[in-house]
Each structure stands twice: as structure tokens, then as C-alpha cells.
Length: 334
Ligand code: AHG
Ligand code: MN
Ligand code: MN
Image (cartoon, rainbow, N blue to C red):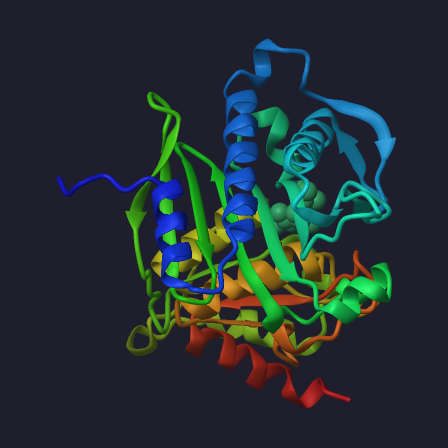
């Protein structure tokens, strides 16, 4: 076995390579890691504590808030509050952006996060995730108030996720490759378990909630029909896997190739998933690994966001697979 490298060491090494680094970004990453470890610990004993089930509230997305959604959100907010480096945090579970830094100080970063992804898996011990996206605020952003941290995905400084599965895994990119760390629960450290991960150019697994088929456009239906056809030469039919946890499905896509889709629907063209803390950070990871994140009509990272909780259709995965979906949807572009 090669020498173990902890995530903290890895982040500090990257900081040393950048002469302009002030250490603030490394501190934010360290805070996310701490939040991830605390949530992993909660999840391990969820059935033993009174933290399963719903809070009785409905969030900004119109969805029922689970006690663990709330608890994971509070955990991340608390870790960011403790060191006061992040200026603003924007979470799926908070209607308004939350300013952490007091007015007399300036923080250079905004963090977007989905504190718990795959909430419908909470009560059945299925896989769960957390997703984060870090943006640097320019001086104009700082002067002009909150709406200006809404920047396209290609401006992210870092993006990644934590997958709470059979083991707890953190995957992130700062734009110099995709790195994976696995939590060693015995020592409470994330240790490097994969660096510069590259994904297959094409796969043979697709991931979609096919119960929604009747709501899709013809282009989406035709694409799914296409990959279900039998054609040995082109590796069809594809196999279907769907966990109900975007992080878990995208993690599989990262290693095995293929694609995940949450398309828009005829009566809901914007789809379900959120741009800033689901689609954009996962696209950052997948594109760094050689894949593509798209709405089916345009690239996710080029979208100029208008609101923090904006939804987008998402087609993400292996380059050749996503490009084929784009071809099927092209005739539907207005
Ligand atoms: P969240 O739990 O953060 O609200 O996200 C749920 C998302 C995503 O994780 C998953 O792939 C998708 O919603 C599942 O939606 P359906 O139940 O509509 O398939
Ligand atoms: Mn989610
Ligand atoms: Mn969530």
C-alpha cells in the first residue's frame, strides 16, 4: 500500500503550489470536510436517535423538509459561521442567502450547497449525498449586494460532493483534475483513494426516473427508446440503474460511464434539479473527468443564473452519450 495522504494534506499541498493563495480557500474546504464528517456520524446512527421523519415544514422548493435535511443544513451553516471566511451561504433548505460575515469585514467567497441529496432515501437507509460549489466574489460583487454572486458554472473555484454510501466518499475538483477521498472512520480522516480520475467516453448504463415518461418531450422518449433497442454492435440495450440520489447516480457514472438524466417535462420545461447546488458543481466534476453536463440543449456551465434556486434540466455523463442526447433534442430547440 502506498503512503496515505489525508484530504487536509492534499488541500495544503495545493495551496503551497499557488503563490497567491491566502489559505482562505483551504479553510473553506476544511470546513466542508468537517461538516461532512459530522453528517456522516449522524447518518450512521440515524435510526437510534430521533432524527428520522419529517419536520412538518415545506421548503422553498415546495418539498417536505426531513429532520435530517434540516440537521445537515444547520451543520454546514455552523461550520461556516465558526471561522467567518465565507461571506454568503446559499442552501437548498434556506429561502434567502445567508450572510455569515459581519458588515465591517469582507469575505471573498460564496458557497452554495445541497446539504442532503436524495432525501427520499433517508428513512430506508439508502445512499445520500451532499453537494457544494464555491465561487469567488469579485470586488464589484462585494459592493453590489447579494444578487451578484449568481455566476455561471464555469466561474466556480471548486465543486464536489460527499457520498454517504457503504463508505463515505468525498470527490472534488478545483479545476485541476478530480480527486477522491474515502473516510477512514477509525481515525476520522478522509484519505486519498483516487486522483486525476478520468471517465469512459461512453458507457452502457443509463439513470432516469422512467415513471415520468408520459411527461417527457418526444425527443427524450425517442432517445430512451434508442438506448433500449437491441444492437450488440453498439452495446445496446443499456442497463438501467436509478437510486433516487443524484450524487450516488453521478458517482456511478463517473466510474462506469453512461449517463444520468433528469429532463424537463412538457408542462415543466425547467425540470426538477437546481442549477447552483446540483447541476453546476456536478458538471464541474464530470467535465474535469472528461464528460459533459448539459440541459440537452445547452451546456450547464454557460447558463447565467437568474435566481439562487433556479431549476434546470440535466443530462450528465460520458461525452459520447450526452452528445447523442443533444442530437436527439436538437429538433426541439426553439
Ligand atoms: P433532494 O433530496 O436534494 O431534494 O434531491 C433529490 C433529487 C435527486 O437527488 C434525485 O436524483 C432526484 O431528486 C429524484 O427525483 P425523483 O424522485 O423525481 O426521481
Ligand atoms: Mn438534491
Ligand atoms: Mn437536498
